[in-house]
Length: 411
Image 1 (cartoon, one colour):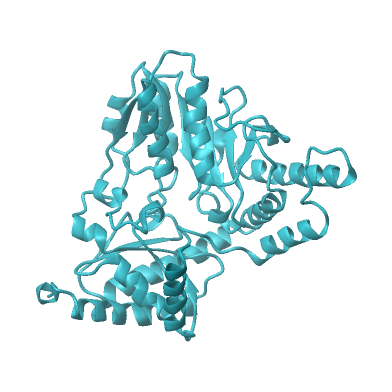
Image 2 (image 1 turned 90 degrees about the vertical axis):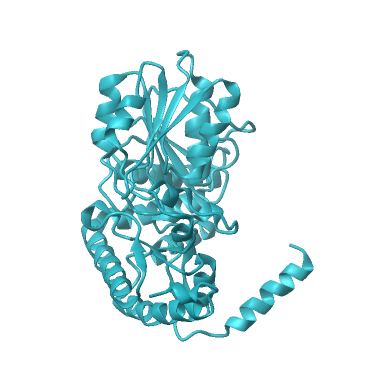
């Protein structure tokens, strides 16, 4: 980082001062961590379980034991076998392995990939890259709440389709797809397809079982389910062919070279264990906080649009709203001054002033997409946190609109 940029950052931090309260709602970009998961990771470092799990000494064997036990926990939570889990260091890496790795192993001659138009960019970009080697990419449209249009989806599936990828829960607007129904449509028309789902935002929020859903691959990420960063995973159904996309010294797994981040994986497993044990209570809590936040904003601020569905068809943690006559980046800064941390647009484009491709796919206008704010509650948030946010959001929006060049159009 250039020294002048670092100075600017230091000045920004200094200008913030010490807020009355801090409420972290930017779970899209980097999730909160369960204290128990953090302790499990720290204890792994203290107990030599950071060692290389394929080296033949006691520390290596203990690391391998911890890795395998963690894998059984994670696999069991989604109805998989331990041998069907491949570790990466993030969900982005796992999505790339799924899309490109499956294409590298493809000997069928089929060259068509079908995705929804609101997939995470770590699915869309690798799929687009395969056009260079003869693949065709079809992006199926969604309705105004983000649900895949089933007729268009069915029409896109033919005998040339090799791979389908649809997220179980959309990362930006929280739409819970009828994934099982989409898998059935796809397999009825082409039983030979590989069906991948990005399950990063489903884990711990909706019931998710790979056997029940009949998916071939599923992407997971530790930091999206209240574990530490540095651990991602790809479920690959036994028998599905995937080739490595990175090459180097292997450790305990064939598809991803390098040393597994065992302490992070241990923290990941602890987070999954907590989500499994407390699933109903955590979901009910998040849903209550989500609705409190949505209803509070919609009732106290004018010219607001809720992006995505309501109720059970929406992920319990997700709040995505567009404030008209405001820029999302301005809102994040204004709220940050009060210790409220949210994200503007998608995580992948938050430093680029381009509207979210997800919101545009819903039919939102550019100005509606530009004013979007994404907030994600967690089991660790309280009603007092939400009340604090609801006290300051109307103030922030009023101030931004008062200095907006189009403020005269409000009302």
